[in-house]
Image (cartoon, rainbow, N blue to C red):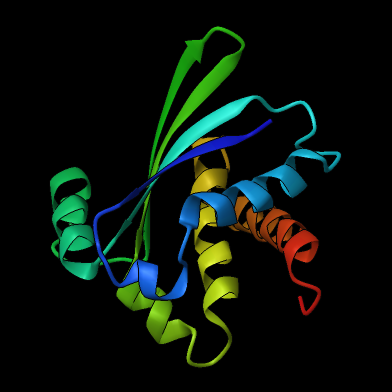
Length: 148
């Protein structure tokens, strides 16, 4: 089963997602029952933050002095029968802005899924890798949202 540790350091998240741990655990339970993820024993942390913190993290770790939607920090640590695969950070303001055209939960799910896929080895530096990652993201989103 896939497990997430949610850290919320920006209060506006709670205005929309009252209990982010519960929300994500429901999604991860669904994901853990899909063929591609059935045997995954992953754990990761998810930081729900704002543009200011994302800009700081982006500068510190990627040397880019601008905000971004999602950052992933892969690491592989064996913990008994579970692998800690890393950390993901997501910006509230960017998701909120994008959700004006769609829906907040859909945009949020897109971002944490994107970040999680980076943690488990997906990348999009090459066009072929990009296509594989987008295909996997869309497949996962279909399990959560019937509109995709």
